Image (cartoon, rainbow, N blue to C red):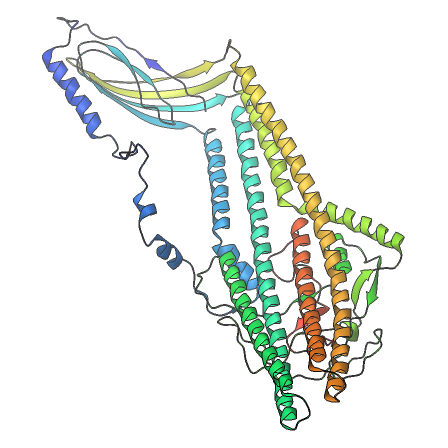
Length: 601
């Protein structure tokens, strides 16, 4: 609301014996008043400066133990968490989101302030003066209606109560409310984007912990097999069937595998620490990871997002066998799943139970009629499906990305600001009413009211209006260019996430095929070694190849889960639970399947 300056004047009785110089008494009063102002000044009005001239650091920052106090405020979680619970905890405890929420609160305060400008304002003004000459004094610069008082010489007291309300502002106040509303909505959209980003980081850290735990299982299974092989080699060496250095080589392999297992367990600890940091909980928390890495066909995901039917994909069975079984036709849905003895060594992070049944495998969707979806053999069909999928994903992103909504709202805010500047140079009319109680030295106390209308209109501004409009319009154009930049970034993120998801999906099929071959090679090599037809190094190489293939399956599933979440984030459809897509997982990295074994979930 425009501030009106009202000069109140009145008839003052002339005081005889007027002097143009300050009397000694008046001078003492003036000095005492100045000293009183200095004494009541805020103690922290000035920043203390050290001898070097640099501002001193606040005690709360430089005090020791601040890190401990900060960590003490973080929640301590000592239980197993699902991915949904982890995301919910991160959304509640993340400092990043708390800061973004304060931005929304600040924008809401600006909106309330803009709305308040349309309402009447009431202010109380008190003047207490003395001296040998009359003067004009303005009330303190508060964000309410102010007044200017013509103070007479001699002792004087005036208590004023003034009510002022806007009658006409040229639409300026209404436009300012619209601008503040757009800023609030933009802040809320940006907060939503931050929430999705934190959810993505949490899910990625959670999936990494799952993958690291699965790699521990892989190394545990390898260690069991090496230990069993060492036991058998010792027996055969005692019988004279193999040379003693075979036993020494097996012992070295057991030690190397134990080291790999230790490193894998360390990686689990580090992954959990990263997850706790993202969630914003105390580093000493002993959280556990539940569930396994899962696979959901991308075609079903695209259909869910765009509301269409999956096209341009064919099924690839994911069957394989465990060591010691016949190698089936890769198109056959039937598999056998022999069990592997439970691990006897190794552990994971605090609060995380080591799966005690086997090394992780991959559950096949073939038993229930589902399958891995990969691009069809026809290049033209795949290209058409690629274009259709990307087009639908870009449309979903345009509707769902909160960053795009925020950019559009900031354009609206900038346009409203430019309009408000133009409207501020229109006539501004306020209505006012005030009451006064005044007492002059040597006179009786008087009281009265004043009411009326105050209007102002700029006639000549020296180019200020044009300069202000130029600045506001440039800011509006800059926000439009900013939205174009965000659009390009969204398009890039959607395309990148789509390509990564497709590649990760193909890597799953490739890794499974390699695992089947490695399992069969190890099975054959184990038979040859036990029959004395091959040497130990060949068997160990086959085992290392199988372990590497098992690790590649884990990495492929991890990459696919991360790529899926990144795609959902890119289109603005990342929910805060694991039921984002509404699709039942058709493939998972199981904790109760033989390495590379495919079975129905």
